[in-house]
Image (cartoon, rainbow, N blue to C red; front, side, top):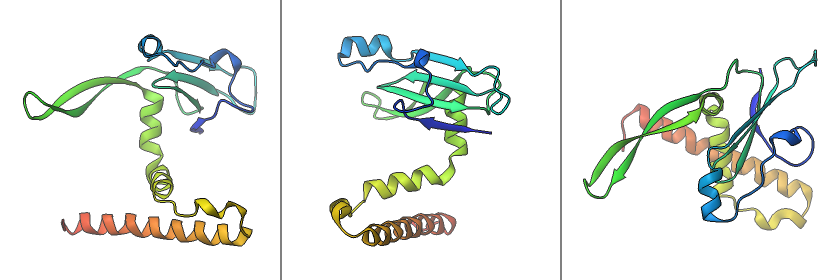
Length: 159
């Protein structure tokens, strides 16, 4: 089973599902929610490969073999209402493939996001290669330590 986000450039994303970036706010409202789907047919090695393009604030491209169908799923999140001064439920729609991806990705993507947010080796590109490897390992160690610390505090109800 394959399920993941892909980039538009290079190989892989069919031309028929590519979407142009929208720059004007008026056009963004029209483009948001546009869904294009293409299935690879006739390939014995990759049966049921589906390429998906969804326009949110920019185009998002996904590829999957894990989905039998693509449907919109009604979800709910809590948003703060300024008039009521409290969190209120707000329904929204999401395609099931993105919902599956969010549940399957686990902590891997979250760890990458944390490591990217607190990255301190931007200046390391023109240095020796082993410095980059050392700092990458150190950042992964720090991120995993932070995640373990948060889990420990959550388990022991410490705030």
